[in-house]
Amino acid sequence: MSRGAPTGRCQLCGSVGKLSFEHVPPESAFNNRPVFLGDIKKMLDAKTVLPLRGGKQCQRGSGAYTLCERCNNNTGGWYGSAYVEWAVQAAYNLSRASGARTIDATYSIYPSRVLKQVLCMFFSANSNGLGQFHDAAKAVVLDKYARGLPDGLGVLAFITRSWLLRQAGFTGQLDIRNGQGYYFSEVAHPPFGFVMTWNCPKPDERLTDIRYFSTFDYDHLVRLSLRLYVLEVNTWAPCDYRTLPEIEEDIRDGQGQRADLPGHD
Image 1 (cartoon, one colour):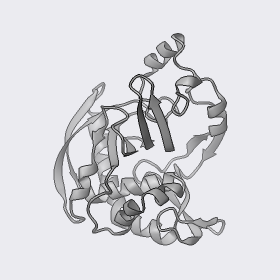
Image 2 (image 1 turned 120 degrees about the horizontal axis):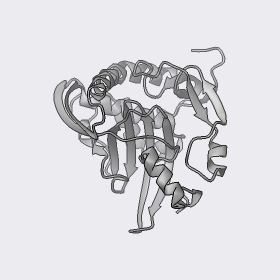
Image 3 (image 1 turned 135 degrees about the horizontal axis):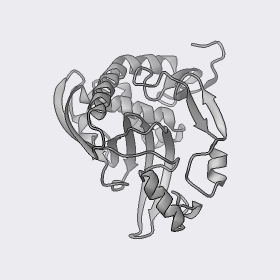
Image 4 (image 1 turned 135 degrees about the vertical axis):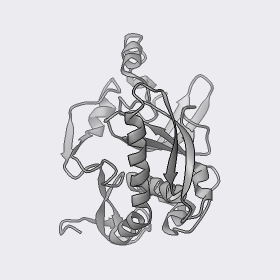
């Protein structure tokens, strides 16, 4: 742990003390290079969802001081390598599927370990408020042998070539076309993107449900066939998977403005 590590509340176990740097996703899952973190205030004040230049460079990769050393070490040892192995397989499949909209592939993975790493990423990327609403989900992550997830909690996945990173905490969105409300969080870092939902349908039908990964045992290595949609991440707005031509067309039609962003419907 760095001497300059801040003191705070661990976003997983809730203990107060020195915090350690948690990579989101794990460092070996293509998260070992400097990344650019946009200035969220400038993004919120802008009239477009396109990324802005204002922000700072993070030399260590995507992540923050969010977990205590014990939680960081435990979750990294229990789940990190399984997630990295899945990410490597996905990146390989993605490299062989130029232009494909979906990738159907069979992966050799530990589903339980992968899902718990994904959950840990969400706890790290969100404020402590996430844990207050989902103590049961935290308990699942802290017990490597635990199975199942709390009712109403959904975990969805997609695959992406886009190198724009996106981490969105609690997000509320209203679809004015049908009156449906969505409540979700998103973490996107190639080759994967994940969305966690609360008591609502999928924000996008192309997202693949991986909640069932929680039904496997910790030591269960399986060959699992999955269809993952290849979605683009071109803006800072969560669950916005428009292509650049689609964004340009929406802007021309007057639909790319702030009023259409999540939380502003």
